Image (cartoon, rainbow, N blue to C red; front, top):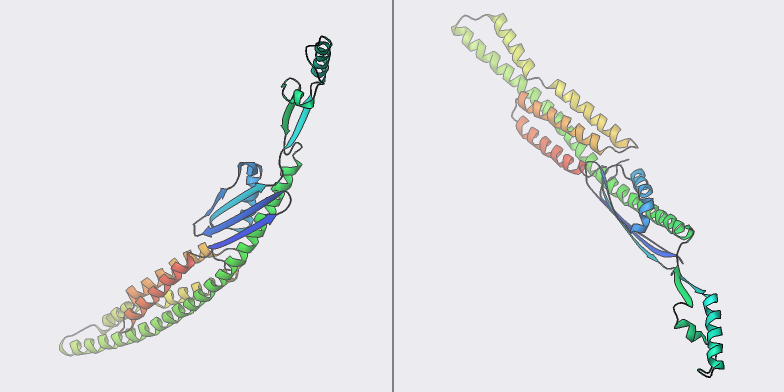
Length: 297
């Protein structure tokens, strides 16, 4: 199936853990070129994401951007330095007994003493399960975006196939017309040469066998039947490639080079009133096909 190399798709996934956004854009390129922009926290799954893309896209430049907004905040742990607190309480009791201070030890007193309490943030993902789930969700979002991308590229490929099929038929018809025009031109020139030889022979002695051989050699040099046959084979092969399940853009591009070569050879060998015009039209049609094939995966 023919697919376009150009496409665009987005996907968003949102749950209680994170909001994930994926944007994928593909453009023409001779080979598969994957460009990723994503948070550093997703680096462990970069190879998996590249593999996922490669399964869906065979050729072209792929630009994928991933945004990630985590919803879970870091936790807090508070540790009490109990030996210090007890020693502090005892010291305060002695101070109260001596009449130096009044009142009991309060939580506020402990908060003002850095030796009494240790406050620290707990890791958001102490055992790794949280980020593992987030990364799995990212891969699922990328897979969804790639699915939409495939749909778009297949739709565009369908339009490309229709246009290329129409132009392929037109080019094949032009070559058939070139063959007819070349044959008519060859017959006309052979007749003209024969008549001219007859006129010369009336005035001069000429070896008729030698003249006949020369006419045959000229006719063979101007015969384009081999080129026409090869062009027909290329047209048939084109349909086989376009119907195949694997990407065909590169093969079609090479096949167009061969088709253009055959038409050029026809133009250099054939004669006739309409041949030159038909050759120019056929080459223009093949050039339009070549431009379109640059978009085929």
